[in-house]
Image (cartoon, rainbow, N blue to C red; front, top):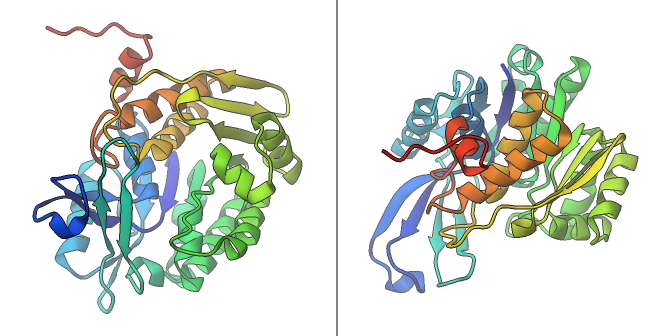
Length: 315
């Protein structure tokens, strides 16, 4: 398996109108979840990927399982919870600003994933274990599961990729910072946004951010700079890599997960650091072209065309 990831995926209800939800009557159902977004992104890019979680024994859980399996992601290690429900969330949209998100995930099935439910053989046979700060925020049980997965990976030479993904609606900053930094010190690849890094280590400049995380023990750092692209660094080289211009952004949610999928695809393909960053920027940009968290994630051919490395044949 090229990469294994795990975390909570939820059913997302997208309103058909902008404005406060009290005036909205119709919604479109889709999938949301940072880790499953990354898994789907990598699967579309041609990689062998596994995702697991704990889902409720309900129609929402069956829907999530069906969608992720249908994207070519291995879901053989998903656990079913007969007591707790699958989480859901609603978006609230206003023109030209990021949407508000309302979570209904407290005591969800995924937040009750326990360390003893992890399959050690499954994790240790992956090339990369990808985790996010969202899983750390869900519950004490899930947090212990994350640290157990990290230990399994470390003990078996599996690379650890970490996206801090700070969600202050899930836990307060003073609780989040020490836990996220503890995981950062255990990670090989870290993918922070520049705003997240400021919250975590008090630095704003990408070069200083990358240097700080490398000093913590990370071997590769990719600092997300939004539309400006990213700054990537390891112990041998560093680059500012410009982003791709998007004329009309439909939805920014999921762009960071697309960035992670593009970057990790480059790592799996053993590409140069600059190329990993180019593809990360490309997938992140393409994710914003479509409404939905994962719907805009491209195939490898689509990414090559978008980045100008292959010619698009229209008809």
